[in-house]
Length: 258
Image (cartoon, rainbow, N blue to C red; front, side, top):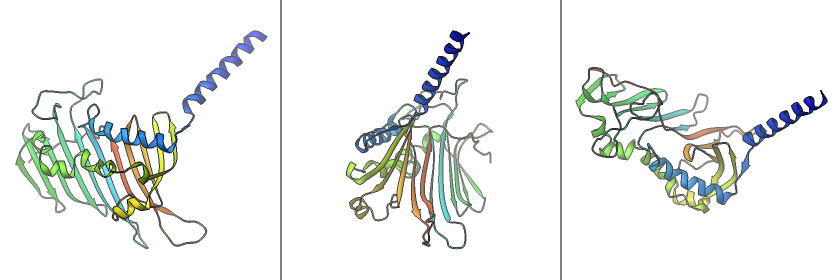
């Protein structure tokens, strides 16, 4: 009986140690964190299935006496998946060789949709590029999602590269890292931008009291800038003045019929 109890205790201790090792945090140096950050940008843009993504970007401005004024853009580039939730590839001209490629863009201002774009095959089997304004009217034009993602409009405004480009010119001295904690597949970097960087980028979305960058599975997952709400007093509140969230598969949607 004593041996049995001792064995059970040993198993419990080993199991607890394994759980702690899996859930424990690993602290990276500022230099190590910066290297992971640079590699994550590259992996986000060029890694496997790098053309399928969902990003949402929001900027907020303080509005005294009311909720903050928020502008938001989301872009969802999606394709068919098999029973194993893997993207199905097919032979098409260009880089987007994915089956049933489609795109959905939504822009909002203060909670109201101002513009919406769909591109892909509608339920009636016809390919459209559909545009809707805040008035709700929709304009349909013949065109495929494969054609839309090759346009200057998409590449400059809606591609993942267009959204991550502002991170690519951040040098190691520009990012003053105060902490970098690795937990499992998540690395959280907390930093501020240097005075030199902000002088060169006076309108930067990264100008705030702190910037938090999350990296998951070696790719950029989110970038958030926090600013003080002001008002003074004992407690200083802050708000998210800028947020970029990225997922590498987005919610399912359908292209509307005329």
